[in-house]
Amino acid sequence: MIAQGFADPVLSGQKTFRALMDAMARPGSIQIIDGIKTAPEALGPTMSAVALSLVDHETTIHLDRRLGDDADVRAFLAFHTSAPRTSECANADFALVSDGLAMPDLAAFKAGTNAYPDRSTTLLIGISGFHSGRRYILSGPGIDGIATVSLDGARADLAEQLSANRQLFPCGVDIIFCAAGEIMALPRSTRISEA
Amino acid sequence: MGLLARATLSELQDLAQPLPLDITVLREPEVGLVLVRGRIGGDGQPFNVGEATVTRAAVRLGGGEVGYGHVLGRAPERARLGAIVDALWQAPDHRPRIESGLLAIDQRLAAEADVKRRQVAATRVDFFTMVRGE
Image (cartoon, rainbow over all chains, first blue to last red; front, side, top):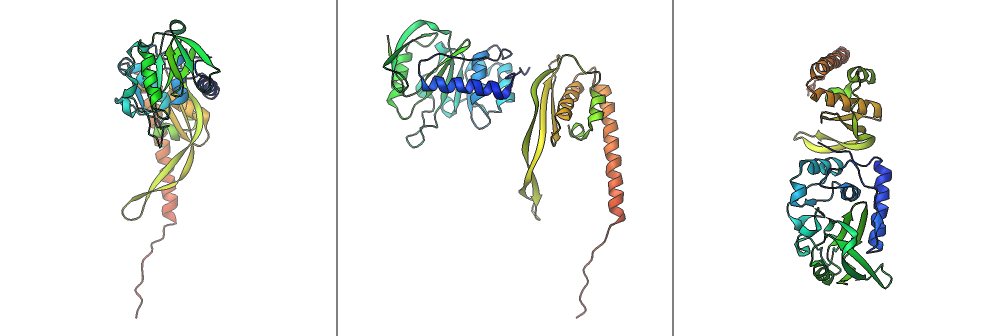
């Protein structure tokens, strides 16, 4: 069954997009998202709102197994975004990963090329929250000095994965972590180490 | 859907009555452009005629039936009602009533097309090439 999208497609989409821009500009900051309450359960209100703001018919999406097996999620995304789906991580403009613990290796995704670093994958990763769990120290553009963040429900070797991703600069993937009502972005420019 | 797109507002209003109570609007009526393509030349090469304004809407009924409405021009109410009627048609309880209503619309359209054909036929001119007598 197709679930309802944004209550107000224009205003809600713009509001979510603004939060995404702030999140990308200030890596490690927590931005509030008005989620889509009617969204399919597997996708969750927050990731649904982010996905509907970013994805359209010109972007290919990759769904992890849990989302890809869910007919409601497929119908929801197909109806509201018209985005073509790909089973290959390496072809996806956006990858939706419902569980941060089961995130594939970042090297599996599209990193872009030196001529076109923008042709890379943006990952939306669902995690439990930003207020407990493993702590990381961030630095880089958009961060005054260093920032300390907590990620609950991310892969244990996340810092290694992201450091390897940082080495590819200007190529590499960008990550948007989605928890209940909150998002945090870690663009490819951010340096990360475990606290 | 072709019939629903050509139906008048009052026809759609009649068909959508009694209005179902459990309508979820998936897509509010929105106006946009579609590219109209045609074929030209002896071999039917596609070419772009131009853009046309369309209004589209989508609704879902309580039973999970999703109805789509697409109409030419700016006509939000016709798109919305068209989507509701499209969804109702998919519900077994409503289908016979909707079918008979659609049949009436089909007959009206056929009658109008017939009148037009007659009007055109009355002014028909046959062209033929004369061979110059040289």
